[in-house]
Length: 67
Image 1 (cartoon, rainbow, N blue to C red):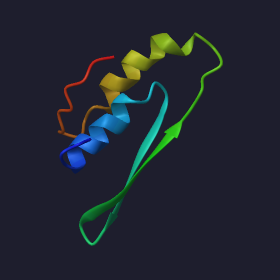
Image 2: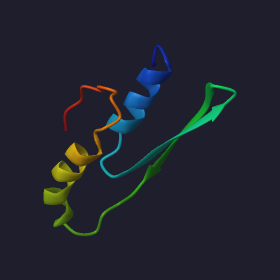
Image 3: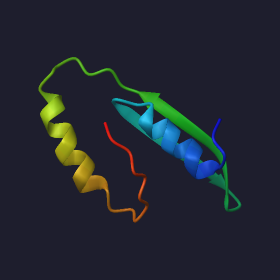
Image 4: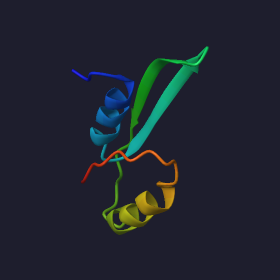
């Protein structure tokens, strides 16, 4: 079990191969973390995934995880 909200978000991200993680905030507090799982049907997307991860990592939050 995660010890704080950031750990819970990190676990949600790590658990996905493809998909999204949505964080709902109310009055400055995280109230919900939702995951959406996507199943890809072609193998051509594997090469693009590494490039997309590098481009999208501009949040300033270092999650320190590997695939």
